[in-house]
Image (cartoon, rainbow, N blue to C red; front, side, top):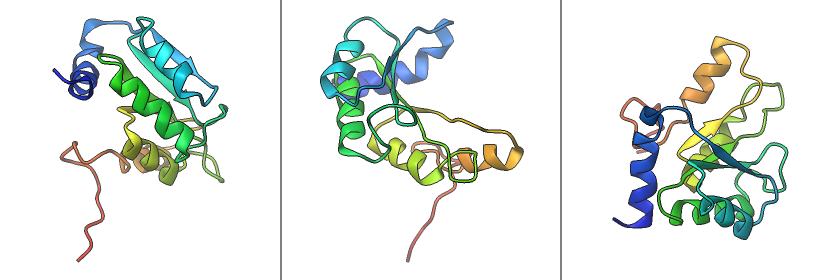
Amino acid sequence: MSPRWAALFAASTTVARGPQILGWCMSGSGLAAETLATAGFDGVVVDCQHGAAGAGSSAALECLRRVALSGGTVPLARAPAGPAGGVDAAAAGALVDAGARGIIAPLISSAADAAALVAVRGHAVSTAVRNISR
């Protein structure tokens, strides 16, 4: 199984195994993210809220890519808060596009905030809200 498919499979089966242990990468370094991914964690969170890698940055992309290619470790990301609180939907969408298999979202304090987060789910989810241009 290729490392990419291994990460996808791990994301779908990991939660069923029970409690998970995650590595947390705040450095924005692809090497640090890869090191965490090969250290035996179930997943690695790339922190784009408080860490050095901003959502949509080349550093975040490199960190998520290296975690995904490590084989079997789930790449996750913490999205930054939006300007008015809640999730920054554009940033969360960029992280999903970059390969994050899960998003940790700060400051979700209402049903509207939760709905905004659900709307950024990736294309692999059949119920995702999508913009279809013609």
